[in-house]
Image (cartoon, rainbow, N blue to C red; front, side, top):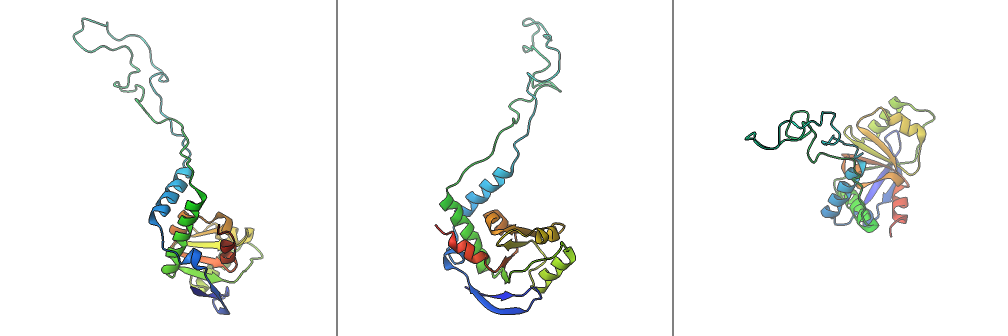
Length: 208
């Protein structure tokens, strides 16, 4: 797949890049994508949820009624889960939701997501650029010039640029990441991708 490289003013630079078919032209594997996204979202969970069980509720431990002879069920404490204010039965406890996936599977999922974007013609290539200072207005103008879209735009940089990141931080529909941070969820959670020229070469060099 061949794409033109745009300048930040929206004009074509005259250069064209050929996207590696091993990354942007494979048959997408939906199950690999599902497993990778599921793992990514699970790993974002803090797992700090907590409820009090009957051993932690602050109530009297006095036995309510005698064991036998009342004609009703046996009760030993107001802390029991059947009473209002009692302890939660089998409630959530702090735990880790982290899981692991094989590197090959994660790579397949990532390449499948990139192939979907390529098939949808949702990738825009732009020549490397820098910003002298954090300017959100200037960044918005660049996105408009290259027709990146205005809904969930993922900008992928070959290396970290603090000024570009700070310029986009206040824009809820734009997410700026480096090629090292690219993941299946971020790709699929965007309507269009803006890749700075050079990112495709870094991705190709990491194929195992």
